[in-house]
Structures are given as structure tokens and as C-alpha cells.
Length: 433
Image 1 (cartoon, rainbow, N blue to C red):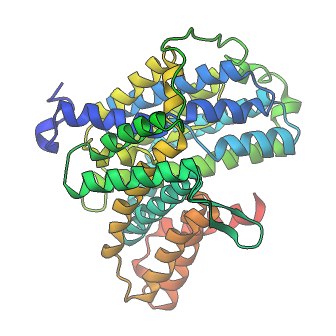
Image 2: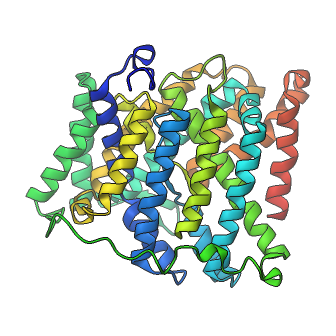
């Protein structure tokens, strides 16, 4: 196993990988509660979606760990599940079964693009400066998510966001967790982020801010209400062969493609796995993501994608695919031990996301800020992710500006032809989709 996962080459060991996989799981375990709640609003069965979410995440993590050998975990994506529910089902009036078919179709297109090498070619064509910006932008994004989850930053009608009530229980618990985790990290204690989460959860239970689990083990609900529903309307051409359905497939395709690309670049960069501005085995990683999306749709959940919370596992020491395998196994076990997951609240995970965000913005030092043709698109990539609440949106806006600033500065020949193609695609996306 050590040889297969290249422990010696990566300078890792079983302890670091298991701890990293566990940290990643705890950082993203919230999806087991949030995703079923989101899709239930679309008319789907909550318990069936819970099982589908856990299975899709487990399969995706195992694909990523065993095929691509990256410490990157997958699960049904936030944002994409909201689009599934509020835009496709509620907004367009599409049946949730048909929406699942759209997710499955987008995954099949992903597989074709991955096997052809097109997706890997696109990722490798992105200039290093913009990849650094993507990593920093994702860092800001997950920090923002952490602050929101803890109630430290809240909605405001006048200014959009504002400092929340930091004297509230959840906010104070998160602040305590940030201090504890920061101390562990400053002391260079391996697994400091994981230990910070454990201590925060214990403190939450002591002060009544986190509910003690009522039981340890529970039975697994039935998957029957959603399993295979993606095939229900395949023979109905009036339902799936129309413009609305095409728009749904293209939107799922676009967002998942660039969410995944951004996450792969950020996590691999943080783990030191990028070589000569290229991501080794990128094709395998993208194929794992594609297969997970198709599998998840068949189980009965929205698009499965790579999770930025994987950076928490990397920060805890994960470097190989074994960490992703560990995370996948934990998602399977979660089917039996779901009551215990109640202690992993947003206030408990917030410190991990915030600290990891601080680690990820270190890539900003590698950007040539004195060259305005680089600085402007890099800044837009970075800032539009948290403000647009989407990794794909940040990438799209920055990548639209990059060819323009390079052209007007007389450096147009340095831009890869693929970047000009992405410029056109992103413009069409914003205009038509």
C-alpha cells in the first residue's frame, strides 16, 4: 500500500493520511444534513437523499483516491444543489426526476471530455499566475463560508454583509476554536486543525452549544424513492429534448467543470503536487469526478464534485490518495453512525475553514502584482469567488479579463489559444445562460 500511494516520494505515512482523511470528512460532514434538506424542497425524499449523498460521496472519494491518488474528497456540491432545487425544479417547473437526468447527462459529457484529454489540456493551459489566484480565491471563499456558518458574518440589507453578534454562543465557540487551532498551528503540531475541531466540539457540548448525541447507531433508510429516478424520462423525448433541458445540462456542466478545476489546482498546489505548472494525473482526477457525478445522479442526488474542504485534510498532513479513501470509508460508516455527526456543527467546522483559508492565500506572494496585465485578472479571480459565492464565477470573470489585458499590453502571443477559447465560452455563458 505504501508503494501504491507513493508514501516515500510524498514524504507521508499512515498516521498523516488517516488523520488528514478524518479531518477532511469532519470538515465536509455537514453535507449529509444540508443536501437532503435542500433537495427535499424540490420534492425529493429526505431519507433517500441522505443515503444517496453518503453513497455518492463515498464512491467519489474512492474513485479519486484509488484512480487519481489525490487527497481530494468529493460529495454533492453546495451551490449546485441550490441551482437544482430553486432554479431548475422550482423556477423552471422541471420534475426532479428530469433534473437528475440532466445531472447524469452532464456527467456523461464529463466522462467523454475526460477520456479525450480535453479537460486535462484545458487545466494545463491555464497560466501559473491565474492558478495562484484561484488558490487564494478559494481560500477567501472558504473563509467567508466559515465566518457565515458561525454567525460571525451575517446578512444585511443595506451593506449585504455585516459583523454578526459575536457574543452569541456559536460565534464565541467558533472564535474559541480559531484561537485553539491557531495555537496548534503556530506550535507546528501535526494534525492541529483536527485537534482544534475535536476540542471545539467538546467545548460546545460542555457549554450546551452542541447537542450530545442521543444514540450512537441508527438504521439505514431506504434508497428506493430516488434510486434510478434519473432513467424515468429517458424515453420521453418531449421532456428531455428541448431548450430548457439543454440549458440545465450545460449549466451543470459549466459549473462543475470549473469548480472541479479550481479545487484540483488549489488543493494540489497546497499539497505541493503541481509540477512545472502541470497537474500530474489530472485526467484521472477529472475522470473520477465525472464518474462520481453519474453515479450520484443514479443514486438520487445533485452533481457530485470535488470539495475545497479537502484543503483542511492537506493542512493536517494528507498528501496521497489514501486520505481520500479514508474519507470515503467514513462516509459509508456515516450511514450507520449519523447521530454522532450531530456534534459536527457549522461552529465546529468554521475554525478549520478559516485557518485553512489563511494558509491558502499564501499563494498571493507568487503573483506578479507589479504587472498590471496580470494583477487585474488575478485580483478579479480572487475577489469574485467569495463575493459571487462561486468558484466558477470567479474563474470566469478573471479569465475573461486575462486575454484582454495581455493583448493591450502587447503580450497577446504569450496567451495560450485555449485561453482565448475560454474567453469566448465564458462570455457566451454570462450572456445566454
